[in-house]
Structures are given as structure tokens and as C-alpha cells.
Image 1: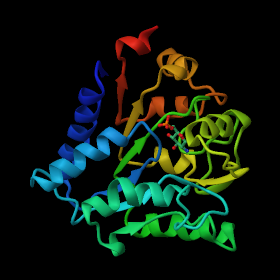
Image 2 (image 1 turned 135 degrees about the vertical axis):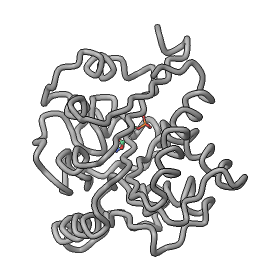
Image 3 (image 1 turned 60 degrees about the vertical axis):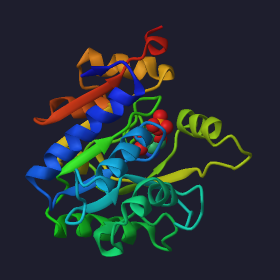
Image 4 (image 1 turned 30 degrees about the horizontal axis):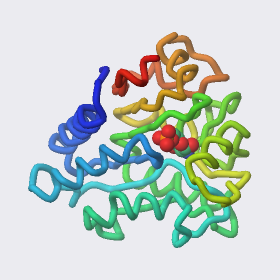
Length: 238
Ligand code: GLP
């Protein structure tokens, strides 16, 4: 689905999530960080405040995290999700499980995260953004598609994009921890959100419709319940 304004983009994404949540209030959600979902999160908070959706029975996981950062670090994805969704929605701590990038044993953290997901019955609703180089979560170009949660080396393209976004002298960590494509593909329903005029090549890979290891987002194309919502504002069509 194409949307022409940021408002329509956020509403369409919120409709997708709220419709599913109404059908299955106990859904397990896997949620992204980044600029793309900010409008969606604001819309969900507003709908929750006005009683149009409830997250009380849902469970929330995140997709990825920088290695080495505790959740208290303002640059962490955990802090982002807390600020933009978890705290405003007032989600109970026992309904939320976020990746710990500062775990002393990251391999053990990956296995514990997989176990926590599996204990909840796996992901029902997976919302994904799109990286400038076609990454989803932190699954970088060329990476294997048969992995669950794992540690990755962040590509120079990803680090450069994040450096620009951070707009500070903060040094982007060299590694991240991410849900693997195998886990993403096991989700019952996937929503891919695409926004950003700088993502032309990644958008073209999606529209090309061919699975290509160099464009991790194309791993999603064969999923039986994939919804794509794209923001195609006039400025983004150029
Ligand atoms: C990061 C995250 C992804 C996110 C992507 C796009 O790399 N690891 O999960 O989807 O950025 O970010 P943005 O929405 O800011 O373009």
C-alpha cells in the first residue's frame, strides 16, 4: 500500500496493528527502532489513550540492539522504545522483553531471547523498518538467512546512516545483536514499513520482487502474510 503523507502512513500502520490486536489481544509483538515507526508509535499512544486499542494483554519484544549499551544509555534501542512507546503506553515490565546489548555473555543472551520468544509461542506481529542498504533489523547484506538471534558486525553503510541520524560525535558501536531472518520469517504476520527518500536502491530491491542475499529485505517477499506500507510523499518520488 502506498501512502502520500506521514499522517496517512502512520494511520495505515496503526490500523494494521490494531486490527490484528483486536483479533488476538494476547499477540506477541516484535517492534523496530528508527525514524520510520515514530508516527506509528504516536498514533498507537493516542489510540490507547482514547480507548481504541489496548496493549494490556500483548507482549513486546524489540528487533535489535547495539552491543555494549545498557538500556539506561540514551543511545540504546531499549531507551528509544521506552521513551517512544513503552512508557507512554504504561506497559507492565513483565510484558516487555528487550535485547540486552550489555549482556556479559552475548551468545547466552541470544539463546535466552530465543527461548523467551519461543515460551510465548513465537512472534505474532512483526513490524520492520528498512535500512538504507536493504537490512531488516540488523541483518546486513550478505548475511545468512537461516539464523535466529545473533551478534552481527554492522556495515559501514549502516554505521554511516546512524552517525548522520545521531547528529552527535557519538561513536556508533561496531556490533549489534539482532533477531535473525529465520525468526522474522516465522512471525505469523509481518508489516514492512518503508519511508525515506534516501532508500531508493533498497526500495527498488523490494519492488524487483526477487530474493537476493545482498538485499536482506527480499527474504520477506515469500512470506505468506507480508504487508508493505510505503510512504511515497511527492518529495520522496524524485
Ligand atoms: C536501524 C535498525 C533497523 C531500522 C533501520 C531503519 O538500522 N537496526 O531496525 O529499521 O535502522 O531506520 P530508519 O527508520 O531510521 O530509517
